[in-house]
Every structure is written in structure tokens, then in C-alpha cells.
Image (cartoon, rainbow, N blue to C red; front, top):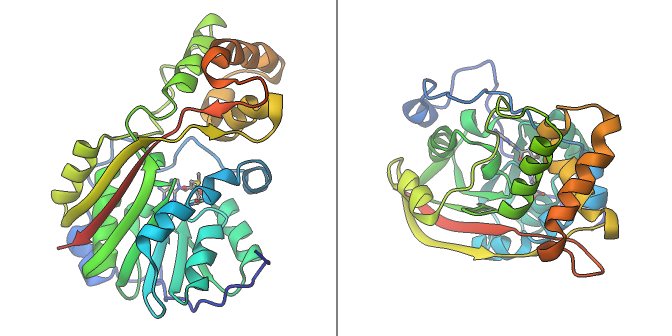
Length: 291
Ligand SMILES: C[S@@+](CC[C@H](N)C(=O)[O-])C[C@H]1O[C@@H](n2cnc3c(N)ncnc32)[C@H](O)[C@@H]1O
């Protein structure tokens, strides 16, 4: 895809300092925070695009479920570096991408200057007008405070509008996650204090949350999607470096080799096939209507 090619028009985001959109105000609940507003995970946009493009390439499937139509107003929540937002714009939709990471939004703006992007948290969306559809790929599992994100998205959608999402689901990356924890334990690195920064719900849990907050789920599936990691023998450590930042920040660089070797040793039997590493991804896809 050529940089800046899509020509979607933007939807005006509300002035962040101005009054909230009235429907948003009705749904927002600022009192439910038992997780920090700022996630301990940080994002390296360049590393994401050069070594982890499989994330948005795998998003083509959920994009088809959305079936964006020309003229629709669509919000991409947790848009990252904007590649799927650009695909929405190519379909002729009027799009806006939001993401809480300044670095990801800067990269998206540079790659797709014709598209409107904003640094905005999914839990506190403010748009000047409601949208016809919300799309989200591989972002909502980064928000443990799922209820706030769902209420915020509901407030941004018109009545009858659709929410089409894919995220990590129950059991996602369980093998790798376990190996990371064991490796930290083996090295005597305390990690219990790291705030919960991931959320992998079951179908029942997530659709229940949607129903409790103004959505009618019409489709949901949880499925295994073993995913080849870029980088050959270094694939697993590259992935851990990108997506498990809060754990790497617990110890000095000199300990990294020991840490990675332990993670790789534990994962090798099930996740390495002699040529590449595979992450044990399990994805949750949901389509719901605003009611
Ligand atoms: C794995 S990336 C996926 C990006 C993009 N949707 C894609 O398919 O390439 C996850 C994104 O979720 C964003 N994110 C995490 N927490 C967020 C929040 N509370 N509000 C908005 N975006 C968030 C991150 O900044 C990151 O860009």
C-alpha cells in the first residue's frame, strides 16, 4: 500500500477541552478505574511496522466482517500505525483513527496524511458527531477496564450502528505468558506488582458486558490462530520485546539473554517447528449492534 494513498475524509473529533458529546456523557462512567489510566505497555511504532505487520495483516478477516460501505462514517479504535484505517478509507468510508499512543498516531499521520487520526483513549472517546460503525483490531485486549471502553464506544455510535472487533480472547498466548512468568521466577525477578495490562475474555464474559452496556451481540467466535513470528530464530524474543515491555523493564539489559533463553527453552517443544516460532494466539471476534 502506498503511503498516503487512501483519500477518506475525516470525521471531526470534539475539541478535547470542550464539552463532551451529549450521548457520550450519558454513558461515560469515570469511577470504575481499578487499573491505571496509563498502561505500563509502551509502543515502538517502527518496530511494530517492520517486525509485527502480521497483526494488521491478520486483520483482513475482521475487516471483511465489517464490510465497510462508501459514505459510512467509521471509527477505528486503537488504530496503531493506521494500516487498517487506510483500508477502511479505501472502501470509500469517512474514517477517523484513534489511539492512546502518541508514537503510533505520529506514525499513522506520516504514512496516511489524508486520514484524520487523534491521540485519544478508547475509554474516553469524544467525537463531535456519532459514527455508523466502530472497528477495532488487536487493541481492546490492551484495556483491562473493558466496561469503560465499551460504554465509551457505545456513546460514540449512532443507534443501530455496528461494533465489529477482533481481540485476544480467553487463553490467548497462554504458553508464552507462562514461560515469561517462569523465567522471571527462575531469575528471582519480582513481578507480582506489575499492573494487569492485558485482558483476554471469553465469549460469555465479553458479550455479557456488551449486553449490559447498550449493545446486542449478533455474532461471536473464539478460535485458535497460531501465528508465525517474523525474525526466524529471533522471532520469539522479538515478540516478547514488543508486547511484554512491562516485564522487560523489570531487570537490566545484561540479564536479557538469560531471560530469553529460559523463555525459548520452555516454549520450544510446542511453539518452534525447526524453522519458525509460532505464537499461540486465540482470537475473539464479535459483531454487535448499538441498541
Ligand atoms: C497491537 S496494536 C494494534 C493496532 C492496529 N489496530 C492494528 O491492527 O495494527 C494495539 C494498539 O492498541 C492501542 N491501545 C492500547 N490501549 C489503548 C487505549 N486505552 N485506547 C486507545 N488505544 C489503545 C495501542 O496504543 C496500540 O497502538
